[in-house]
Amino acid sequence: MNKVLINGNFLCRNLTGIERFAFETCRCLDELIDSNTEFSILVPANARTIPEYKNIKLVRSKKEIHGFPFWDMGTFAKACKKTKSIGLNFSNTAPLGKLCGFSFIHDVYAKDFPGDFTTFKDKLVKLYCRISYWNIARNAKKIFTVSEFSKKRIIYWYGIPEEKIAVIPNGWEHFLKIKIDNSIFEKFPILKNTGYFFTLGSLQKRKNLKWILKYAKANPGDLFAVSGKTISGMKSKEIEDLSQLKNVVLLGYVSDEEVKALLQNCRAFVFPSYYEGFGIPPLEALAAGAKIIISKAASLPEIYKNSAVYINPNDTNINLNEILNQSTFGKESVLKKYTYSNAAEELLKEIQK
Image (cartoon, rainbow, N blue to C red; front, side):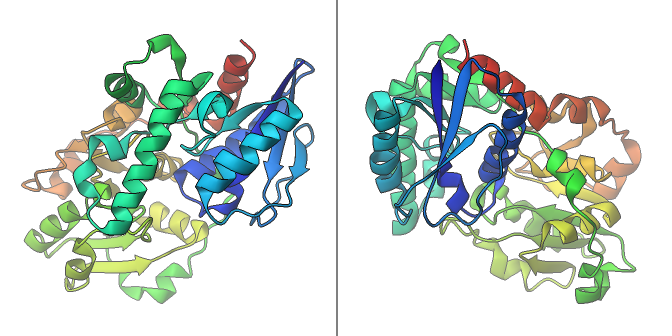
């Protein structure tokens, strides 16, 4: 019998796209497991959440995660050896060498856009990311990524055979369980009676708030609601400038329940990001019934096809109101294709090959 040990490092991390993907895919995987493969998950002592599974066994570690290299390359690697298991790593990191196992590289942002990492802390993040990419590319039993775009970029940088990489896309079903919290409109009453464009994401440079800033400055009659928080120190310089504009409302961190309310009431969800391995927020927006206006860049056209209106992430010389009125949106095929259930089925199939 094959034995797979899931790296539970995502249980200690902030809930962004990668962590959401790991949580939801494992939940669906738990429903599919058969007698051909035994799955366990190594849970850090300081895990923020302890998952409940029927078929995936919980292995409690006495070690806490305080520095991810030490967990991945030490604690998790030793556990794989001890249990004679192949590791499954969701979070762009893995043990060094042949203990790398099955590993995800969601994107190679630090390789494609090294100039986005400017501060000392950013450069350390970039170095760690690039070491992780290289290690997984060279040593993984099988590499998983979330789009054909990311697959091509990994092959481009690391020259590995195409058959070594499988595409396992993201999903959106977690949004079905989220209730709506309209209290966000009490906190920000300006959004109640005025049509607004909404944008969401970690406030990193690649999310391209520069586009929102330039457009909002040039179109004072259009209202923008911007939410999100900084990750890994790579904060966009545009935050302070956006705060000076009367037609931009900076929401800070908002809950999933508030996000759903904002999506259901916005004129459109605007996502000007110039680099995404997949891009979950527009999928959540479609699931909430919002129209989406997104960049014609990276993986986004591949994923969203005719369900979106596309913009040039480097050009704000457009009118959002006009393109909304001129466009039709289709979403059913996208929501049907990209689900965590489909991801789990494909992942299990690849692992059992």
